[in-house]
Each structure stands twice: as C-alpha cells, then as structure tokens.
Amino acid sequence: MKHLLIICLLCILTNSTQAQLRLPRLISNGMVLQRDTPLNIWGWAKAGEKITVRFNRKTYKTVTDATGKWQVKLPSTAAGGPYSMDIVGSTQLTVNDILMGDVWFCSGQSNMVHQLNIHDVTYANEIAKANYPQIRQFWIPTLTNLQGPQSDLPNGQWKAAVGEDVRPFSAVAYFFAKKIHQQYGIPIGIINASVGGTPIEAWMSEEGLTDFVTLKATAEKNKDTTYINSLSRRQPTHRPAPPVDLGQTGATKWYDPAYVPKGWRPINIPGYWEDQGIKDLNGVVWYRREITIPASMAGKPARVFLGRIVDADELYINGKSVGRTTYQYPQRRYAVPPDLLKAGKNVFVVRVTNMAGKGGFVPDKPYCVFAGADTVDLKGTWQYKVGTVYRPVEGVFGGGIAAQNQPTALYNAMVAPEIKFAIKGFCWYQGESNAGQPEQYRTLLPALIKNWRNQWQQGALPFLFIQLPGFMDYNYLPSESNWAILREGQLNALSVPNTAMVVAIDLGEWNDIHPDNKQGVGERLALAALKTAYHENLVSSGPLYQSAQVDGNKITISFTHVGGGLITHDGEELGEFAIAGSDKKFVWAKAKIEGDKVVVWSDEVLSPKFVRYAWADNPVNPNLYNKEGLPASPFRTDN
Image (cartoon, rainbow, N blue to C red):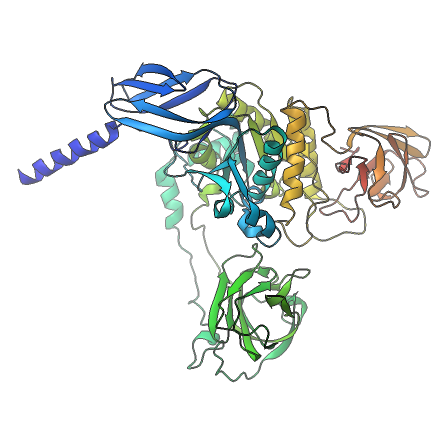
C-alpha cells in the first residue's frame, strides 16, 4: 500500500509539472522578434486552460487544446523596444527586454560555429570594444534526435553582443549582424544552430529527403532504437591491449624538469614527423626543448602559440601542464600563469597524439611565446622521442554511429523547435562534410532551401549561403577537384529564386579548414543580405559565369555581376584559366579582359571547346574581380 501511495504521488507531481504554464526556450528574456510580420507566440499548459497574452498594450486570448498546446498570433510591429510580455493562465509568466528587429537563422557546420573567442587574437580589439546591446544571439547547443522532430530545446538563452558575452557569438554571424545593424540602426537577432563536421542531410527534415531514396531509408531505419542499440553492442574480434606511454610510466615523467633525456632525436617544428624520418607512425610522440626566456618576460603572464597540431596535444612548461587540446582543428593558444616562466632556461615539452595520417605541427602557423612586448620564437630544432605506437586494430565491426551525421538528426533536435518563430531569412555555411560526394550537393542544397522554406511557412524567405573557400595543397597543374565540384553545386543553387551566394575563394587558408578571416565572410554575407533581403541598389557579388562563345582558337566568357567592370585585383595577368578541346585535356591558358568579358586561349589547343577558372581545391591565384573588390566564382563550361 505504501509503495502504491508513493507511485500515485509521483504521478500527481509529474502531471502537475507537465501542466504548468510553459514557454519555448526561444521565447525568453532578451529575445528579438521579427518586425513587420505577424508573430506566433506559443507554449504549453493544462488542457482546456484559458491563456491571456498581453503585449504592446493589447490583449490576446486563447484556450489550450486537448494536449495542452496553445498559440496566439500577434500583429506586425515596427522595429523598436524594449517591450515586456505577460502570459497568464493558472499562473503568470513575464518575458522582459524584448526587441523588435530582424531575426536571421544561421546554420551549418564548423565555420558557422566558430566563435569570436576562437579567433580572439585576430579579433581582440573587436571583442574588447563590443558594445552592441541590440545585436543578440540565441546559441542552440548540439542536439540530435533520430526518432522525429522535437517541439522545444532543453536549454539556451539570448545574449547581447556586449563585453564578454560577445565571445560565444559565431564570428561570421556577428560581423554579418553588425554590418546590418549599423546600416539600419535596428535590432538584429541571430539564432545559431550549427555543428562542426556535419553533412547537409542531417539538417533536413524527413519530408525534405523525399527525393533522396537512400537517405530517407536511412532516416527511417534509424528510428528503430533496437537497430541503433545493436550497432553500439558490436565488438571487435581482436583488439590489442591499450598501449603504454613510456613518457608517463617511469619514475620520472618526460615532462618533469628533473628528467634527464636519453636517446632523443632532432626534429623540426613546425613539420610532420612522417616527413622527418618517422614512417607511418600513429601513436604518441614527445617533443622537448630548452627555451631561453629573457628577464623581461620572467614572472609575467604569458601566452604560447603552438599553431595547429595533428591530432591532440598537451603542453608542459617547467613540469606544469598549461594547456591541452583533444582534436586537430583549433589553433593552440595557451595562457601561461605569471609565476611559471623564469629568466634563463625553461623546459618546454609537448605530448602529441596522432591517430591517422601525418602527425605533428602544421606549417605556416605562429609558434612563439610572448609576454608584454617581448616574444620568443619556438620554431626550429627540438628533440623527440616516441612514447607509444598504436598497432592496427584488425577485425573490428562498427561501434555505433555518429548521430549528428545521420539524415534528419540535427533538423529534428535543433531546427524543428524554431520553425514557428518568425524570421527574416537564412544564412548557411556548410559543405565541407559533403565534399566526398560533391555531385549530390547539386540537388541537396536546393532541396534544403525548399525544405526550410516549407517548414517556416513564410514564403520564399531569403536564403544566403557561403561558397567554400580555398583549402588544401596548391596544385600548379590543371586538375580535378571534389571541392570545385561542390562549389559548382553551390553556384547552381542560385537558380533558386531569392537566394544569394558569397564567393569566398580568396578567404581560405591552405592548411586550415577553419580560416581566420571570418570578418570578410560575414561582411560579404551582409552585402548579399542588403541586396537580396533589403533590396538595396548595390553590387553584392563578384562576377558569375554566364555563357561561353567559341570563336576560332579562342573562347569568350560573359559574366553577370560585373559591377563597375572586370579587373585583376593584383594588377597582374589573369590566372587560373585552363582550356581544353573535345578531349577535355586541360592546359593552362592565357586570358585577358576585354570590356565586360574575358577572352581565353592557348597555343596548345587550336580547337578549344571548354574553359575552367579556379578549378581546384585551392587555386593558386584566382585574381579575377570586379571593381567593387569582389572575386569571381570558380566555374567550368564542360559540365
């Protein structure tokens, strides 16, 4: 009887909690609501409960349905605020500090995720001076759901771009919002739903995948929790014992200043160890060097820049751990406490773990320690010793799936809860994770645009997207490229009405999939918005391929978006044009600007048929621009 009573009390408490008046996370203090359009305000309460919403001196009433859901429609309101909103049922809730402005839904993978804080050196001044109380971001945490769309978020709050609160802002979205805010003086809200390393299909609803039979079948199969659990239970037929790291097992650890190094070999930083005499090693390699610190730096707080490291690392100075990173992409910037550096010799030790591919220190990045106005270079010859070698694992079956990479998983958990919230438009920065199958992106991106517009039910909302920048090794011969094919798919998506694309081919870094120049991307994105969403009469894009005309041994290329005219941004001859005959064997071509066209030819191809421009993962010098300073998009005519 006692147990039955407890169960009954728990049921009563649970039902009481579920029946309490509740708002979605988005509708909360500090929110920005979309101006000049009818607005949904919704929530949950007890079934059949009368709900009153008071906003801007007006009252709106409704009654919850049988499931406890309620919704009211507010009329269009001009930009302004702050306002408050009272929601009254059996209890009362008040939402304060509400602004009316423009709300942009910003999404994608890591380059949309990357926060100002990650780029705090490049944008230190921007962070220090940030004081934009009318620019606000709602950051959605990484969430997945394979079963179906969710109605709300577990947490999240609106933050203004003021002081330290600006650090978690998406850098691209921040510079985008700042430019629009300064242009019009209106509040700008950013809803940021982004997850690094994720494919486009994870961001689409099941309805959006209708034309993608395999992806939709996968989404359907993933709803079976028994199937998903079975993947997690699969075990390898053979797994070697965990390797022992010699640097951490002896009486004196290798990072200890008292350790006397024996058998260490020279190696250069930066550089990969596979390029310096270590063959195909996956495991742990220790780096050690005595660094001479001047007296002017001793006893002061300092920072260490260790570029980028593949894959993970931990830095020790004089035996103390001062920083660690668990994956390869972030630039290493570690704070050194003021009592650690001393005048004279200081022992720097870096423990590097690599799981696959080349391990070590990425070239062409900063490697130094600095305090105040003094800097000590860390590049040069260090000593290394292998702590452990990972043996290949044989006979391993799958150990589950990465939910965030599955079709619909991110849409269900991170997009669906927002679709009732009125917005101005979309900003999309993604594609790197689909570069392995770039042809499919030609249809996936238009499908995403259609899918989201259908879900929001606000008509053909502006959809702005960023074309992938240059990345990876430079290739000095005409070549094939998955990244170029994916960029072409992005370019073709401009055929969808009310879209705009940012060309970012010149804003990448060969050795970093997360280029540092987020301001350039964000401001070009804002230009696209000013043209597409705000209908300003301005040039918002670089030249885009329009047509090609063969005339003898030359091909003449016509463009749209020539603006004030075509130029080379560096004053040099046009580069990155290649030409081919019917055999499609491309060779570098000569090219010159003639008015608003480009004429391309090569003495090696007497009967040309096709032209390519900047067709590479990372073209060496794509220097065709318009006079407004915006670069031409890569293209080909042989598709």
